[in-house]
Amino acid sequence: MDDALQRLLETERRAEELSRQASDEKDRAIEDALAETRREDAQFQARIPELHATFLDKATLRAERTVGELRKRYDERHSQIRQQAEEHEAAAVQAAFKLITDPTR
Image (cartoon, rainbow, N blue to C red; front, side):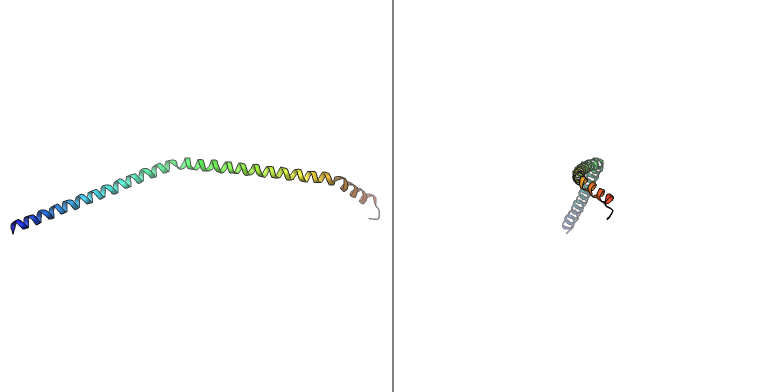
């Protein structure tokens, strides 16, 4: 009986040791994961200015392209209006002259 009790106590001691080792391994794994997460977060934080600059550059290019397109459309429309004004200028002068010179109106 004494021998069986000794084996049982030894088995319990080994089980506790294995449990402690597993707990230590789990703690190390958690610490490693946290350290890796901190490293990755630091790398991401360090890249934020670069990401922001890239985004800003792309937004600036899009804005410049849009402004260029708007200028082109404005210039085209301005030319059309100028052309129409020139085409109707003679008729407008004649109509104004008639209004001024026709006493019945």
